[in-house]
Image (cartoon, rainbow, N blue to C red; front, side):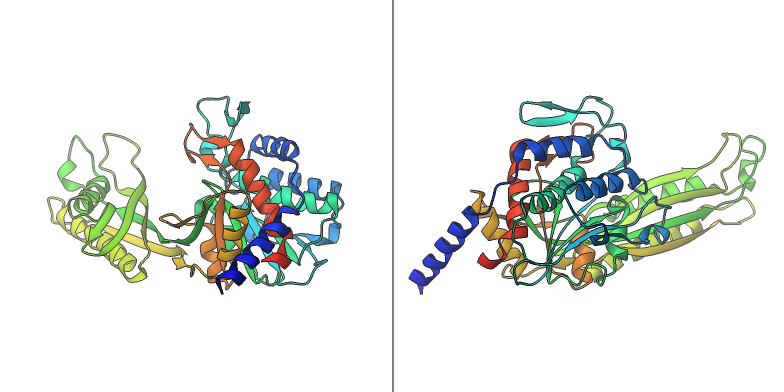
Amino acid sequence: MAKASKKASAAKAKALSAVPEADGDRAIDLVMKLLAIPGKSGQEGAVAEFIKKQLLKAGAPKSAITTDKANSRTPIPGETGNLVFTLPGTNRGPRRMLSAHMDTVPICVGSQPVRTNNLVRSADPTTGLGADDRAGVGVTLTAALEILRQKLPHPPLTFCWFIQEEIGLQGARLIKKSMLKNPRYAFNWDGGSPFKLTIGATGGYRLDIDVYGIAAHAGGAPEWGVSAIAIASLAIADLQRGGWHGLIQKGKKVGTSNVGMVRGGEATNVVTDYVQLRAEARSHDPKFRQKIVAEIENAFKRATREVKSVTGATGSFEMRGRLDYEAFKLNENEPCVEIAKTVVRSVGGEVQLAVANGGVDANWLNKHGIPTVSLGCGQLNQHMVTEQLDLDWYRDACQIGLRIATATETL
């Protein structure tokens, strides 16, 4: 049995080594161009146009490139929908999908990518680079372009570039499986090491909280007012003291919560009567996540009862929530995980299996019934002005992407 296994591994390695290499210089030139295109969530139109032009230039049939209308159903207006490119297989095998998201966080708008040796950063120290996730776009697009240019044999393939990942995985949430031509499994590129395989991720719940107080003159009669700011402050402090804000550990249950936005008030001489908050709760355990949400609601109930005017009047609040993405955990023997392991090892990488405490497009793809493993592309310090792209890792990621797309018969 051991001999048979060794022979099989050797055969896979030999076949994989025969897969043509991705052109590293061309791949780097491509990602440098992608990094320079502005495109925060909802403004991915220019990125999508760039991808389409590259595909058509390489010989892709126009009919194989489609865009959905997911942007008409997202929480914020969007310039474009999810972009999908499909290829029939020249080899038999189950259809597989390669994906990444087109948007960046707002701090990356204005990125000026510059290369120093094997690292890329933004020349503007006040902006992030945007390698999360333009590097992922670069990896998946490089694989598609190399297949078209070199006319490489491949199984049925779907390439998908999602919109609005950074504001709740909106593109992946709204994608139709039929538009993707029902892939058997998928490989998603996002942040980190190209040898890290993310096989699970937490679930996230997003909250909008409106707090209503009673306006009054802050100098002449503040006691007649009810401060919405005071209510919000007490609620947040209550959560912090009770261990329900930030990292949450209650026995064996673990999760996180965060009040990430507080907005309200227009003048210091008026008792503020309205405050808007946005918050989130995360946990790999759906029931514990619901418990975190319930604790947030209870904190605002207590704070609302506590803040009163001289007449005993109180404020009120409204809380609305939605599931951004559900948690998932793949079996280590899932075919997509096994394929990714084999390919990572074929480029000399040491496989690292990980479970993320943040959401990735794979959360929704797995929910849609498409087992999906996520890989990195060499991004460092994502969502920070110190963000960088490691080009050695990026080259490895491009080779891994091309091998995953073309080496079907060996896996």
